[in-house]
Length: 227
Ligand SMILES: Nc1ncnc2c1ncn2[C@@H]1O[C@H](COP(=O)(O)OP(=O)(O)OP(=O)(O)O)[C@@H](O)[C@H]1O
Ligand SMILES: [Mg+2]
Image 1 (cartoon, rainbow, N blue to C red):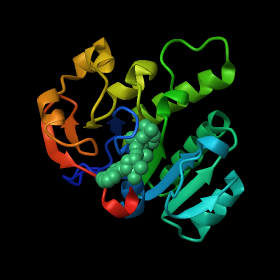
Image 2: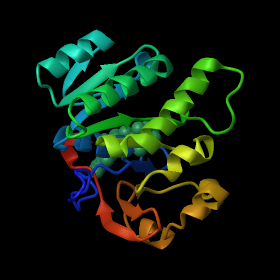
Image 3: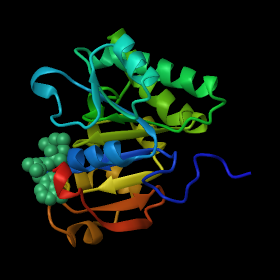
Image 4: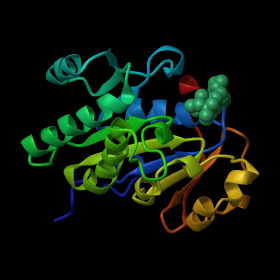
C-alpha cells in the first residue's frame, strides 16, 4: 500500500519542507501560495503586531478555540495570529496530532512557520522552559508529524540560527539567494547545495533540492498574486 503522504509531488506530499534565503527573496510569498493552493488542511502560525506576515490567505483566527471553530467550519487554509508563538506552537502541534489520530492519520495536514529559527533556535535550551518546549515542538513536528500526515514547512533567513535536528528532517529544501557567510557555514555546506543552480535565477527564483542535494525543481518562484 502506498503511504498517504506519498504523492510524488514535493509541493503536495506529506514530507517536510525547509525554505531558505536571505531577506526579501520571496520565501514568504512562496509559502502564501503553498498555503492557499495546497490540498492539505493548512495552518499558518503567524505572529502579531509588527512581526505579523501580511496577506496570509484563508480564515484568520486569534485563539485555539477559534481555530477549532474554523476546523468545524471546514476551513482548509487558516491563519492563526498569535500574540505568543512559542506558547501556541506546542498547542497547535497537540491539536494537529490529535486530529491526525482521530482520523486514523488519513487527514492530510500542513503547518507553516515563518521565521522558524525563533521557534526552533539552535543549541541546548536549558534556561528558558518555553523556548525549550518550542524547540522540542519543532523536533516533534519534524520527526513525528510525517507519519501522522502532517507536512511541516519551516522558513528561515538564517539556518545557522535554527535547530539542526529540525532542519535535518526536511526532505525538500527550497533555496533562494543566500549571503556568502551563510553559504560558507558548516550547516549549509553539509546540505550540499549547487549554488550555481541557485545563482542562475533572479532574486525571486529559488531551486528545490532534496535531502541528498539533488535538484528536484529549478526556477521555483511565487506567482505574482502572492508576492
Ligand atoms: N515571484 C516574485 N515576483 C516579484 N516580486 C516578488 C516575488 N516574490 C517576492 N517578491 C517581492 O519581494 C519582496 C519580498 O518578498 P517576501 O516577503 O516573500 O520575501 P522574504 O524572502 O520572505 O523576505 P524576508 O526574509 O525579509 O521576510 C516583496 O515585496 C514581494 O512583493
Ligand atoms: Mg518573509
